[in-house]
Length: 174
Image (cartoon, rainbow, N blue to C red; front, side):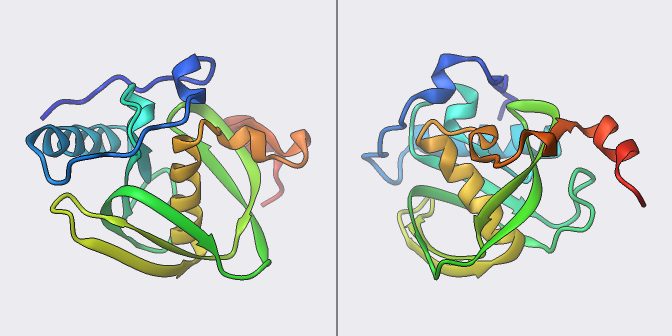
């Protein structure tokens, strides 16, 4: 049980493609997942990818019940997802504001698939198979992007919709 250091944009490890987890379950995986959940909670994150703490494996954790960084977000069940695969459900996309623990203090308006289907495994090796929409779909896509070396600023369509949270908050009309 440890809170790990989160890598920040500019660290080349965030650009690498993560390797699949070969052994599920394992004591090492359990330790990694515990550390990831502790780190995510300590930073009020909605999700965290293993690569963000310097572990190049295809592992993400996510979940939101009440989060000060996303006060209006619908709840997302706490999930440990290993070796995820995402399939878009249709061509529809939605733009919404995103932040990232590896890009602290900044937000951007990011297009994402409105509905997705994802599969992967939990810590015990059981299949997770879900179709989701809204914030849940956005969080999964954001975290899984990390596994392919993609940070959300690469998804922005308009850099005028990217900036520091405090400046964006004061600049937007109420």
